[in-house]
Length: 84
Image (cartoon, rainbow, N blue to C red):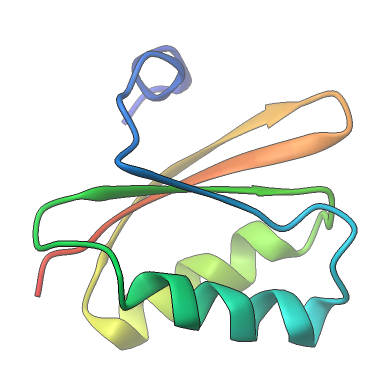
């Protein structure tokens, strides 16, 4: 998906992981993912530059769709759709 499309995408759940330690952020993401319904979009906001790669890998392992990342000054917005 293009960054322009992602910028206007409706997110059902926003998970703000800014200022979270990396391991803690992934644990919190896993916990939040349990509340996301099938087909819903989760937007993860992080100030950790490596988080986008890790969330992409996490989504693949979970069987979710990694939709893309929008880079903004000071943070990344990472989009994942629950597909199973």
